[in-house]
Image (cartoon, rainbow, N blue to C red):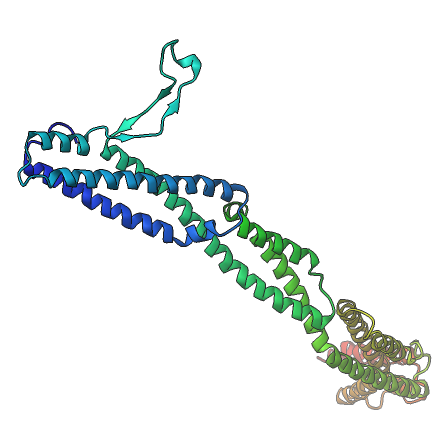
Length: 402
């Protein structure tokens, strides 16, 4: 506010402005004191960056209240001068101009270093500013303080909003860990408590470093592993029952293989197949018994892995035994196939008019003898059948019969 306030209207407008500013300052400072961030910072034992920022902000808050007191007193002084007369005279106008626009605010004195003052110079310097300049400084300090309060309150709210769900997850995962008898929470709990302590004492550093994502990642990994162990536990009995069923299937296939092999030995000469045994079912049964015996001593991860291995072994064994049954049965099927082909060739020979051909009849009888003799020599039968087929084809070419 420069120059002389020359009229009552100017004085009244200026006085109304500073009075309104004084009221707004008071309301803002009260809100500042009631700010959630202020209560959190004021009532907490702080450390690190948060303690440093709060020390600065707290000092600024104290200064703000002192500056407000100065500002309020100047407003009251100006109001008193203005109330002396309904129409202020030159003396009042000059005094009001000085109060409302002059350097009436004395700041704390500052010591001048000896190297910067002369022999007779002052040891201290005192700065004086106007009410407007004081208001500007108060605005700047208020913005700085409220920024610290808001940052602390926001960081606390965000951190607590994340810590609470993590706590609930840790509790749920610890219950899961207890149910499966596994899971080491010592390091995770320790790191979580360190993160919580940092949030409580130095929330601004906690916000900057943010250890929670890594804790959440480790918790998720642990939760995933324990959930898998719980699944193994819950499915274990049914998987053992399924393995019992596979053992029964293997035993049935082995019995079929032995029975069929006995029949083959009577009907097929030199089958060239290994003698079927019950070693597959015995091996599965033995491993299954050992797995059951380890239920109370081995962890679920080990039991799950061993069950998977036994599953694969059991299915491989079952496939092998069934393949063996097919191979054994295939010998009988091969004999039946050769017999069918012999009959078909005989029908073909007759259709071509060679029913009375002595050579062809001899070849037919030779193949028939081999195929219908037990045990049957399948390689010899195949060769005899091929000779009979070839002879029929030769007759067909010689006669030009299609």
